[in-house]
Length: 202
Image 1 (tube, helix red, strand yellow):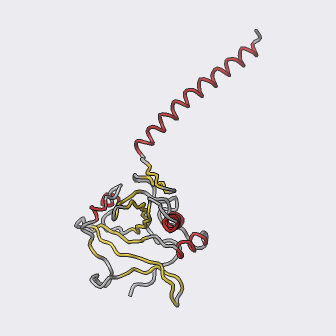
Image 2: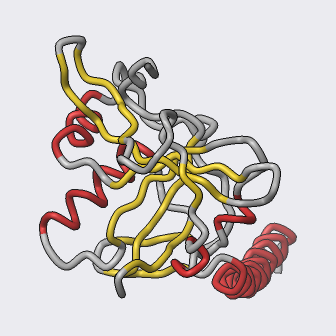
Image 3: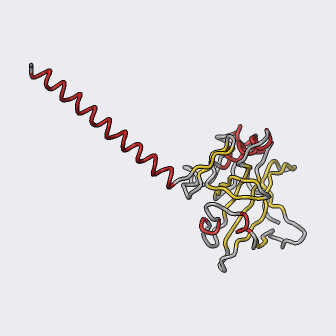
């Protein structure tokens, strides 16, 4: 048998051995990923239930200049949006935001209830009952507010689907889930509101 054929057979054997080894590694890696990063599939929604990078853009969401279609979708079918923070005493507070069109154009505005102070911030003592996964308390850093967007994870109708698509398009993929009124929601945190600027606080 010529040296060329021997080398050829040896090369094929090495390739086969490496392929077998890599397939074993892949299976092991897949098993590890499924254990460390559980995924919740509900309808078309897939939510990563562990702490992961907010977005490659640094947690700022979509920009209007680069993502006009996503921003239009956000305006048509906005997800729920709240600004959340953990104060120095360790308590979580929040205030709600919505996209609004006025004479000055489209802007984010916080919604102040009658009971809320002028800046809109209110304590949320019952937030632990919403079963955040990962826990919101652990994700937030003290005195560093973030914007929490949420949409139904158990998509059951067109409105749910559009709201979920609007959230992921403008804010990014969900990092976790919570439950409210027996429904599962996907949530994502960003450092800045996407698409439109916040209106000046009065």
